[in-house]
Image (cartoon, rainbow, N blue to C red; front, side, top):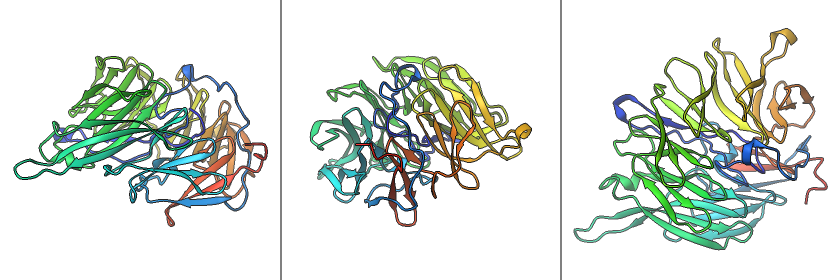
Amino acid sequence: MKFMGSANGRNAVRRPLRLVSVVLGVLFAVAACGGGHPAGGGRAADPKAPPESFPQDPSTTFQGDWPSPGAERDPADVVALGAHLAYAYDRDDVGITAFRLDNGDIAWHTSLPEGGSVAQAPRLTGNTVIGAFATTETGAGTYADRHGVSVVAMEAGTGKTLWTREIATDSVSDNEAGAAVPHVVGADARHVLVASYEQGYSDTPPLSALLDTRTGRVIWTDADFKGVDLEESVAVGVRHDGDFVGKSTSDGGQQWKRDLRLGEATASDPGPGLTFADGTAAGGTLLIDAATGATRLDSDDTSLLDCHYDGWNTTICAGADGSGHAAVWAVDVRTSDVVWRLPDASTNRVAPEITSAWHGVVYAQADQAMTLDTRTGRDLRTDIGPVSPTMVNDGYGLVYDDSARAIDVYRAVDASAFG
């Protein structure tokens, strides 16, 4: 994952009465992917030192008419972060807007006249930004409105439309398809996973589609599958009855199915090869092998609420232990081993609030903003500045200002050489 270390989003699934409940959360919105990852969780080919500190005041701020963020107010709910641009939906002049990180100006805006409702953020993969929009063709006489999803790929630097693909959703229900809101679950160099479903309780099953990133060709659709994670060979999602399912990205064939018995479950992408699953039923958080459905890690009585993948080989998961105290686990995404955890009574160390992770560095807040080493958990710096960013790339840290509905951009103090 490139250009960002941010909290993962979670998709909630209520099991009682076989109804689906959706929690708008944060999904990885990253420059190289939104569910795709570097092979094997390895280091980037051209690693740069992550930011070490930030100034007192933001270097710029930008605002937009984007969808409301989730409960955690993380900017990854509303923007996809690239090296020099951040991409967000615009609900006024419906389309996608690219903001310059250095000064907050609009680099480009591409409208989609037929577009309607949007959710979360576009996804950025390589030089392509991809969005999903609800569309409605108004009926006349005895003909009802026709609902669909428009998936659009744009050139990340210019906003030029590369391809557009329409996906019909009327087969899901007669009228309720109009209440469904689509979003791009994930995108990598080969595939785009889009899911469309109603917010809150619904008798209508979710709809998901997998497309070819280069051409927009629809590889498969599934009218009873809510996609939550995209990996290289498997798309992971949840059926209307609550079963977790892995589907082949090549032909949509079911690779595995599990009833995790999690009660009200949440699911997300914590890093390459893994799917995060947690719920209200007894038991801990699970990290599942996306390819096989097997459990790779069970946190027992610790409930991990979200994970922050550092783009290399570690994901930092935060939550609470069985006593309700804050807990942080660092997990190797290749082996699923816990490489360190906090608190640590033997060294009198507490668990800080984790805000992001990027290229070997964890950004956190204890008595003040600080950083830790992702592989060892040792404190790196306790003087990084007034804020701990919730999105990070090699030159900037971003913080969402909930009261102003704005995103503050902090240029790293040590990023003078960053182009």
